[in-house]
Image 1: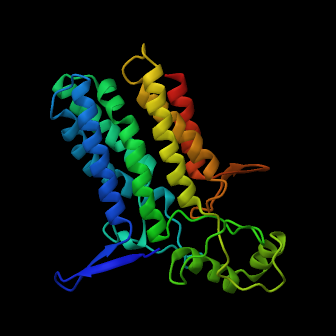
Image 2: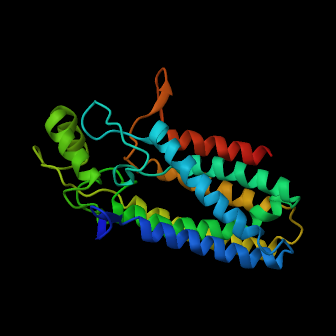
Image 3: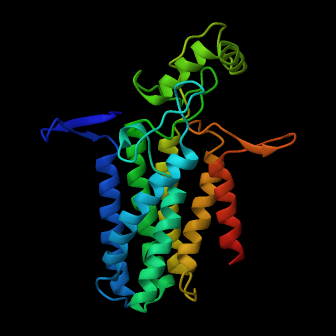
Length: 284
């Protein structure tokens, strides 16, 4: 992985972080493929491109807002660090924030153009899953969306460079919460007084493979699903993503706070949102 790819000679130096190229490629693939699919569905030639560009700008803004206000978790002990809107190297994006804001923007666009929002969304279903898979490679390069520490001798764990957030989190737990660290490592089978920089679950790679699998499943389902209503393919995408996101959150550790009540420890915010999305789409 490589958090910082290179620095462009612009001003004092413009950093190009590892997640930018996969994100840009994922957006380009999604828009280009959806444009070709929209033409076959009889939609206006520029509708998919307009919707794609609109959802990109609005969705990124919504994803950033949602991340900073709901998903962001500080890594310097208990004190929250304020991260600016454009300090992308110190924070990421939230899919759910991007989805809600982009869907609303495209729905308004479809209403104004008097075209079917469901048909337009269907054109984007498989391309969006593929674009997200490509973009998730950037999560691996930047070291975000990391997993929990694996049990001792687990064969598929990943170690990240020392300067990444996941390793910083481990060192902070080791220094600031030694009792928690010792209990955690002993429960996972590590020897007593084990130091940080331990392997974690490869959640980014699992996400990439899962999203490509969802892409193939949607394409297969479309070929066999002849009498579907507009919007049903996109609904299938949302259901598939919600299921995958709910379960992978059990292995992710980048947002460790749990939301529950009473004796119920709770679920991660991403799991609650995935559950809400699944129920909402299933009931629609």
